[in-house]
Length: 507
Ligand code: B12
Ligand code: SF4
Image (tube, rainbow, N blue to C red; front, side, top):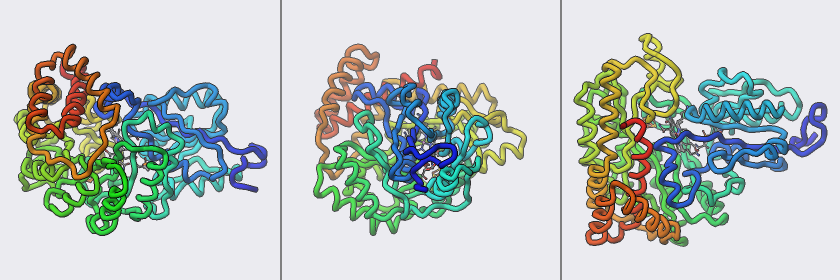
């Protein structure tokens, strides 16, 4: 019996129709919803996990992707499907629950995987099969049993997959035009051990990498599909295996860019990137122009408490500036609500963010995600209150904090109200642009950027309460950093998004 036919008994000999379904994100900082409107995009990134799962399904199966962030799920889509493959993060739970109910009502078989289900599958009784952890390891066994009509409810593993056998995601299933950026993954895992992080629980401490040839094949695939925009390397920590990066991947990327119009890359890394000028120069040459870094807190006791030793005993502002000068914009993650935090932390965070020129500063309240060491500690100490919403920037926390809750909430509110207010926000953009060295690759100006400029000049420059700061920034940029004009416009638009998102919290 061919693997691609439904099992003889239940399904008969018909080609399988697999519907890959991705639930909606709430309107959060990370959705960039209010910024995406300026460039007429629906979502920032496609669901890479599902596109990878698609590539692991039998080639002969008919596959469709519905990412409800960019298109609605219709009854016709559902009627077409024989099996629904669902992925989600915790933050997508409400949308995932609604989709599960809808699929069940339509009598569909649901197979669920990805971070939400890997952490909390027992909370979804209506799902037929859970294929947890990395699909490269668990999906083949499920498919074998499924086609023989004897699939179990749960497939899980404690092993980690060899990424060298991971297939290239099937991007062709996604309507690329609706996304602001594409994603690609080189490695999984991180050598560090931060107490609140579930990445190492899910993907381990030893960074596993794809080969440079695999990454180039994936990039070629995207390029062939006509993609010319930015690409996010969604690695937990791109520099987890510096040797492989320096010797294999970056030289291959530099070579690849040589024959193309510059495609900008951005990624995530740890702060020790600042210690390696050669690595930063190589990254910039390869086309990286931005990096997200977990700074968390300028307070040493907070860093010690969460075991973020790579951030300890450093001049973090100087580190950030060194990275910016190397041509990489630093986006930063910050946390308040550590046991060691006192009310002085709120102003310290604001001062740090302003001094460092980290424009995209994502400040969250500490939350205990399932499976993390922080979760285990809070449970042990009898401090767990409820499930995490999965959104660390919604102003909630799921455990009893040491600081008085009202003081914590009010302090958090004050941070957001300050750092996104037009005055400090635009000042920070200038602080950053003063430091930032332009990337080494030349990126073609896209018509959407021109459109975004016109749109923003009306929305922010005429109607917005930041109109004075907006025009001041653009004039300053024109005279001092003319090459950064498109970046200045983009950051002004981001500011608008951050203000809109935080409005409910800062009122
Ligand atoms: C890219 C990314 C994003 C993108 C998402 C874009 C998108 N459309 O997917 C953006 C930047 C928007 C984002 C935002 C957030 N993210 Co995020 N993100 C990631 C990141 C770095 C990579 C995800 C990815 O693409 N991986 C590559 C693919 C190939 O791996 P994968 O998705 O895990 O899929 C594999 C398996 O899980 C499995 N699988 C997945 N789905 C399915 C489905 C089926 C049916 C099957 C069988 C198997 C399967 O098979 C795949 C191959 O092995 C991960 C970290 C990580 N290592 O996963 C965090 C991560 C998923 N994000 C996380 C979080 C918490 C967030 C935020 C809430 C904020 C934050 N603190 O980062 C926001 C929320 C978004 C919002 N708008 O509110 C957490 C999720 C924790 C959880 N348990 O839910 C993670 C794990 C990182 C972390 N610990 O902070 N994120
Ligand atoms: S450095 Fe980042 S990915 Fe690595 S353990 Fe810490 S929080 Fe997680």
